[in-house]
Image (tube, rainbow, N blue to C red; front, top):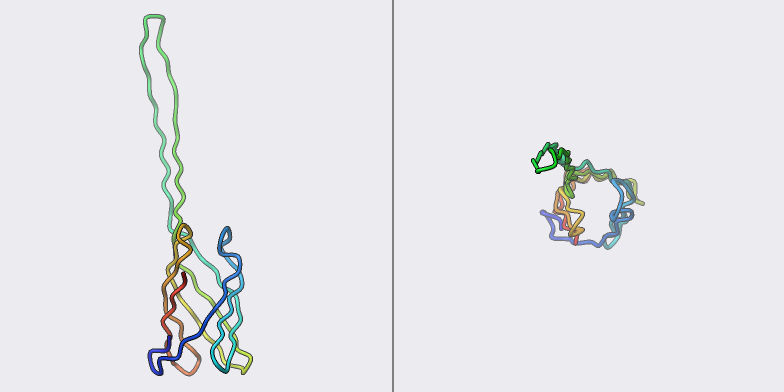
Length: 117
């Protein structure tokens, strides 16, 4: 939604389920923007542990490791319209809920709030 005029549009995101990049389309009443989006996930976590246990027959040793990958991060999109305008978007996203919030700015300076659900 435009912060200046209140104009709203609809969009489509391709490749969001399993990818870190894809195609993005925004449609407003008289203009369509198309471009690519790219994301960078937040860092995950890694862990490594050792354990041992004693038994009457001897000692049992083992190892374990843990790796967790984040489901969220930051992204941006660079779009061009069918009328020659451009728009740049920055957003924060979650893959689990397939949602995002952010801000887009058109080449004339107009700012739009971005909500994806």
